[in-house]
Length: 552
Image (cartoon, rainbow, N blue to C red; front, side):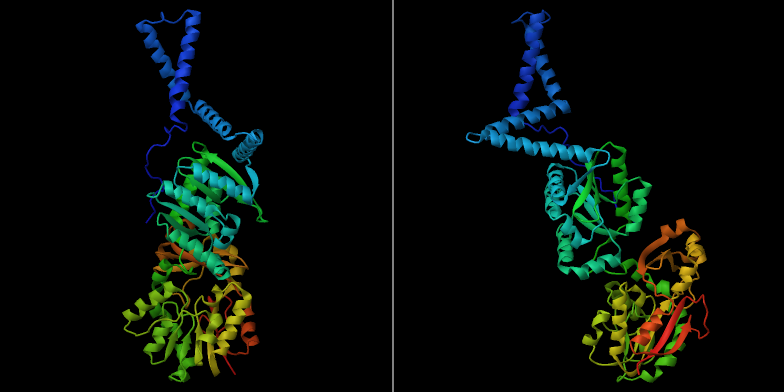
């Protein structure tokens, strides 16, 4: 369901007079009397004291009212008022110095405004940006929404006063909904949370405490595409509804920011509004703690896996290698349980199983899956792999790490540490069953696959057998693979339909050929068997490669 537009009706603010009542009364009067006197001198005014004289004088006064309501004249009058105020404040001694100070501040502001209104904007220091944006929030009456490419910890460093200034805007528009969109992958949000949990929590809580500001995140690649399609030079944009927009272009060094200001009525302002609306409709809610896999994918994971079909191929392999552990003294740790497919299968067959799943979305879906199959799975443990040996003093007969699990870890050092933890929690002679996608195949066939992933990627060979929900790579590189899940699987035949039917995406971090096997042996494991799509016959185009490794 699409999110509603951010535009909201509100009371008119254009007719507000920015100067005091005596300006409103006496300036039109002076203008009217001036016109009257000039016309008397040239002989074009009715005789003084007659009714016509009074009538025309009233018309001159009304004319004066109209004149000072012209925006440019209104602005001049406002400046005149401010100059009078400054003059009245600047009492001797030090009168000239105070006036010089006020003029200097005014000059600096005019320079900044002229710079940001220019075609290329103006590069400002962090402090100058802070000062200028605070002024925008103070003056802006329109509801503010923004798009931000920095995660919370960096946001506070670059724009330390921004949220406080945003509160000034919220005080004017407490009833109207707005949005802040973080351009970040789920992995980036998780890493920022791990890097500086306090900053992330403070940022999250600020939005939770202000229900009128929704906090979403959007993949950066999507934002860049939308910005390019709309000819916007940057992805970081703040909009004061129906007034103006600021385009932020942060410098790489983090000490300065390029700032461009666009007023309502310019074509670029309409592009900014469309950009914000498009992203808000595509955004997912930021959660605390941040999840690697969203709720929508987790809720559709059973349809993606098709456990009945998976078990036909997987159960013989598992039972062949795990039958010796059918004892309470040799429990099995399903370290990446997901929605509990393997845990339910083994528990139903009489094994003692401990299910571990760090993603809340999957843990909740696992409870539903187990209940529907009449299996008492119990609460899933939410432990990080890097702390397994601390959490589980009892040793396991076997550890399972199946599906996309180990490939979700971006850091190579943490991958090795995780495998070491699997080794440590196993009994002597215990078994680790772990798999990976066939990333070398994807990289070799990258061009062919990405021409049309919906048709050119080999689907459902063993682990993900669903027909109504499918998944495929939509970006492929040696550093990262973006994986999309989409509905109406077999009916999707092209990129456009794939994009429309996508229900979520996540990132996979590919192993090089032989890399996972090397990590296993370096960690002390002996590799007993390698399966290719759950068969022992090696094939170059297998979708999954599964390793059965034993602790000596």
